Image (tube, rainbow, N blue to C red; front, side, top):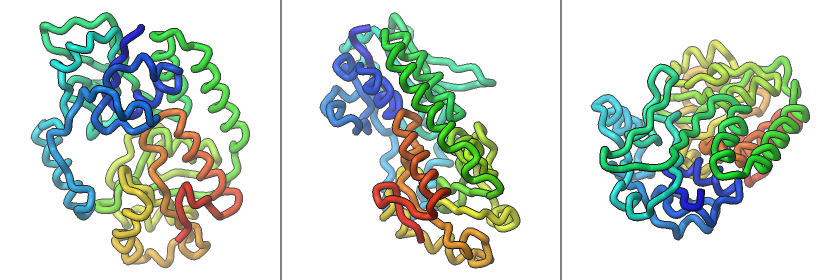
Length: 299
């Protein structure tokens, strides 16, 4: 495969990790890693421009309304893709906010649809749910571009990270917040990481996560509270942190009493090799109670 188009930032990172950057001819408009992809032809565009400075509840309302009305937030620019004549198109269907309408997941089956007059030799959909799904799904792409050895190396890195962190947080409970208002907890590979480290997550490992009532979180009474809204930097999250810290009973949580409340960069958001950075942040938190500034801060 000599000409590759990626439809989302995560698969762009994966293909680049597999030494395929030079073969990428088209990327999504928000592709920003590695640096070289920023100058590739853009093959997607946003249909809704959401100001990231809006309150989280307003952003949530906009997104939910579009999803409810079955209006996509992004679209593929098929004319541009056709002009690029790719051998392979790669995209993800796991996140309904980020996925393109051309990629849908129904009953566990993934459908990749293109215009009727568009023919492509190969398409791959990247759909990890658990931590080890990331190297597993990476291997699918690796086989398509002849980079299996690189994917094996990633699998070995992930397996080693599990061995090094297994059980380090045994006997504790953890809540990871991926949206501030309404409170949304992350499941998928993040809860899976928490579970592999021995801590009990509130959101099901490998599951979709979802909106949780604050009273449920209070009753769960986590020993670690991690606030890491998707698409928000630490500084942006801190602008709304009082929406959590002023909730009833916040000060009574074990995490607050023990000083185990953290605001982290959303390094988990793109399920790629860089997910290991989020795992390293969790490792620091569980073993030292501190976290490097490049990952986030302790409140």
